[in-house]
Image (cartoon, rainbow, N blue to C red):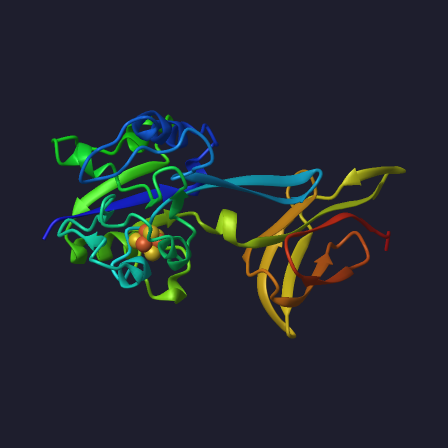
Length: 282
Ligand code: SF4
């Protein structure tokens, strides 16, 4: 059975908001009987681009992560719906029936991803339905995929086995996998949004002037064990990325043959920029 999947590449999203706008253009003021009631003009974000800043100046990055209904294969919203108001289609798309779901506000809380929005005027729960009405008319892509200028969104229409191969090959992840909802929306480079880094900038006195120190060996240790090693770059910078938030104490040891070694210990809550680390002369 061929099914729809969406792949979101966090590294390619530059917050153009075209995906969000395409949803508003398609659904605000337009109802599609059998698929959805009109989306309200204000307040709903069926596709919501989340933003996360990490670090401190000058070592700062920003990640944007488009989020939407995940079209879960084990969807809590389907279990919470009365009268069969939410259905999983054979092509993997989850549809909230705009007539049967009328008054079923409990569906908003049933989605652990916050992907269902309550339409106060129509008294219906609503979500991004993969533009099922367009796909059923022969469109090859949902509008958000067509509208993205950087290729951060793409669909894959294939069988589950083939999709599992693609996910493994490309290192794809899903949101909150531990919930067991089996999303059909996959992410590349999700670490840019979900994980933390420990970074710093190394300097030292060279010929009476403070200079960036490249070529210093920096090891990252946790619980007495070395977990990573880097060499500082031409700006004296190092950056250990992909660390879990709230994952405890780490020690960065800095070694350079021309300077005294230094170590810095931090307890990681979120990303830490250690700032300028000055090495003393030997
Ligand atoms: S993301 Fe939420 S609304 Fe979408 S299928 Fe999963 S549980 Fe249902």
